[in-house]
Every structure is written in structure tokens, then in C-alpha cells.
Image (cartoon, rainbow, N blue to C red; front, side, top):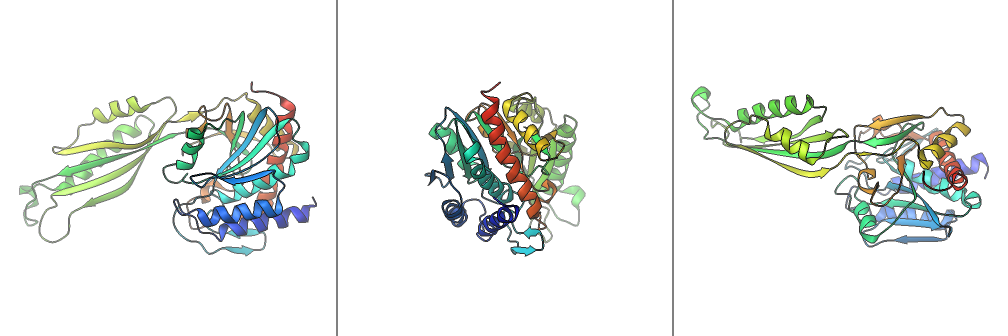
Length: 358
């Protein structure tokens, strides 16, 4: 494929899926757009949509399975789709429709070089929510020997670790009082602020990343708030488990009549450094003139769920600036997409040569 044809193909595919707005639980139109693009333009042997809406394209019949796994849902918030010069703008351009299109195209480019392996390109639903797409792969018994998670890593980083995640909900109850004499009353807002300070101080001292995502109390007027709630999102360092988190929370001195609960716990994950998939990505990047580096991320991805359950080994790689993810400035260049596609294609070739899992 010529360089200009590759650029046009990537641009066509990305614009198609960007125009289909797809926040979590509303991915149907985008999945249909990707399915049409894959069937019309790429050379996979089979393209199907599973029962929860994941798109799975595959070719080959070898004994080992190489899987490129990304997500097609986005965070909420529309961004007008624009192509200005070399740059493509739109919700999901970086996280993660850009990496997804690069991988589908790159995997198709490698079909004649794949050797005795089976190659799958998977677009999951729900990654920005409950990850029901990833859990469907677990439930259905999918098994991959080598998995590349399609997340933006700046086009050069190979990610082997993601932090875990959980939300802590704190609810406080107070007796209230008159705002003219707050020192005589009891305010749920005051309790929540003290609770937030204690929570943040305790967990940050243990290397958790703590972010306040909701704070709600009171209705205005002349009455001190009687009820309130806050929600904090936690990013959990590798080496700490759910028991460690509960122990840390139990050690906090909470204000009177405040309670907490933990929701949506996802454990941290770390892949091996000297695995075939990491070596293949490094070799592919070097062959493309890029100096690769290992990276560890403070966020989460579907690798947290799939590594060890579905995939024997895994790493994350993708084009796009991760600092633009979840922002209103999401954009990616066609040059980045081209690099990603070429790296993915070379990775298939390298893995077909490297042999089994190490």
C-alpha cells in the first residue's frame, strides 16, 4: 500500500467512527460504522458483533492468537468533527478511536506476513463505564496469547502497568441549625469538608491518587445543611489490594455521623517486562525509527480486567497524546495514525517470528 493510500484509508476510517457519537451505552452507531469500514476496506476473514455490542474482526487459523483490543466508547461531550490540514479533531480522536482505527488497519496490513497465527482486532464497548465489553470477553471464554491494548501512549511508550481504581462515597448527617449562629449548630457540609481533608491526607500519604468528583450538601437559605455526600475517585498503586484500601479507610478518624462505602473496585495490573509482546513492540518501534520506552500509567484500562483472565501477556501502545484524553481539545495527526498502523503491522510480524510466550 502506498503512503498516500494508507493516509487516506486511516483518515476515512477515523472520520467515519468520530462522526458516530458514542458515549458509554450508546456505541451502536459507531460499532456499525466501524463494521462497515472493516468489511468494505479491510481484509479480515470474519467480522462479527457479539451479544453486548463488541466488534471482533479476525483472520488466520494458527495455534497462537494475537489480539489488538481497544474501546469504541468515549466519555460524554460532543466535539465537532473537523479535519484541518494533517489534524483530525473530535471526541475519541485520542481516547481511543484513533488507536483503534490504526490497529484495525495495521492488523489488516500484516495479513500476508502473519505466519502461523490468528489475529484479532477487537473494539470493546463500555470501557469508560462498567467495562461490560471486557467482562463479556472473560465470560465468553476468549483466550489470547499476546494482547496489545489500544490506548494513547504518545506513539513511543509501551505501557506495562496501570493503577487500580475505586470510588469512595462518604455520607454525613447533621442536626442543622440557624445560619445566624453556625457555631451553635451542626452542618453536614462542614463534616464533609473535614472528611475530605482526612481522606485525602491519609490516602495520598500512602501513594494513592485521590480526586474529588462530587460534593453535594444543603439547599441554600437560612438552615445549616442536614445531609451531604461526596464521591472521591482513587487510583490505587500496584502492590496494594482491596484489603489494604479498606484498612486505610478504617484508620481514618471520620467526623461523627459520617459513613463511607467503596464502589467499583478494579485492581491494579502489571505485565512482565521481558515478554514476547513487549519485545515485539520495541522491535517494531525501533524499525520505524522510534526510540521506545517502558511506561507505567496512573489511570486504568481494560488491561486491568483482561490481563491474566483472557490474555497470557499484554502491554498497551497507541498513537495520540494521552494528555488530550477526556478533554475538549482531543485531536490527532494523520502522521500519528500512520506510525501507529505501521507499528501494529510490524508487531504482528515480530510476534509471528518470536514464537510462544516467554
